[in-house]
Length: 493
Image 1 (spheres, rainbow, N blue to C red):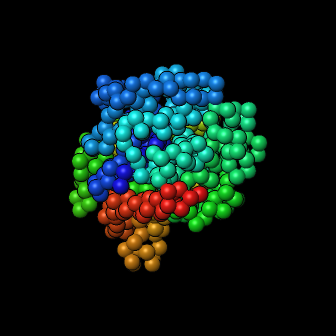
Image 2 (image 1 turned 135 degrees about the vertical axis):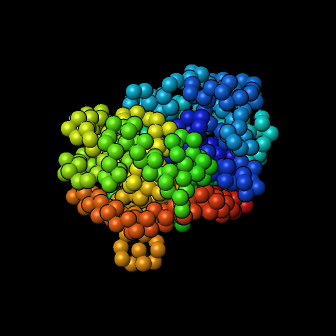
Image 3 (image 1 turned 90 degrees about the horizontal axis):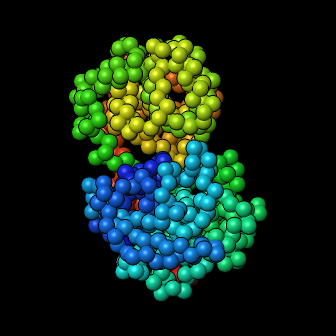
């Protein structure tokens, strides 16, 4: 099968979150199953053509956005350590910037123009590249206009008529909302601005455009697929999703087993694997030294790697922190986000210098070192479409402490007498979104950490789970088959 991934970020070229991980790992997994998968994304300033060996693939061609005609080029490279062809849409006026979507925390005001131009360039480039996708796999609001154009402006185009479309929602909270007056920038017909199209309380909603036009919709975990059809998690789109419930599928993300492997990880001071954990103890000591924490082997060292935003539960963590830090624990935090939480965490680190270390930055090597050096990993999310860090943690012998929501509910089995007896327990799960519930879960983890045999069983169970993309890639292939069956050439819309 020929599958085109249209994505606004792909690791390691450009990344702000889990979308970039999925857009890199899933194509590689599908390619290993024998499919011809190719990727197209913007060429941001961060994507160095020399570093990644990019070469011209197409000369400049025009794309119309509102009353502007922009000229774009296409460069070609490949995902590192793979044979997956990756194309880059080159348009300096739109993409030669430091940030992908924002500047200093504020959205670029021309984001609709940027991603409308990108979406149209995707569709214009494929015939020129002489490669015809059977499936166009879009991701989040930034590429939802690809699906919308396939319905409203290209449904009779012989090149695209038989293509099936799939939209993956990585985080429903980000929808691409713009004023009605900007509709001309979409280059879609006015019929698309309706209650059955992209209109959303008088605004343009790009994600909604994908939800109503894609042949199939996927989310990144089964629980999240159910949650977003409810008022609590639906962000105003629960009615749209519920109306398409037969076409909504939740497929759990996997992780890249080559990138996240404690036996071969070059970021670590010592490597290790299940059955031989001496290297993990060395990683803990090294992390404590690096972070300026006392080397206390009996302290439960808890890692947190996240955006410092309320979606990720940083509010209930800070409310619980004073009491939490009186327990026999140490905590290492890595991430950036809301400046108010930067200050709160910095103040807490100053008050508890032997128990809390805060790193207000993104550092990939340190992320690996925290996963390996920590005993436990805390994810108290308000909502979590899938989450990857809990899966990285289990692979690294680090026991997750999570809230039962989204993909966290699908991946972590709470410790109980029954799950211990069955050999399925992998972590600690709490239900209520509150500081007290978080604190209780950490106390349970502290108690279990004192029982070396019990903790060892938790560690080993998690490390032996298959969290690779292979199973999920096969699930996506079934979604692609369903999308093809619904495409205009076979079923009409």
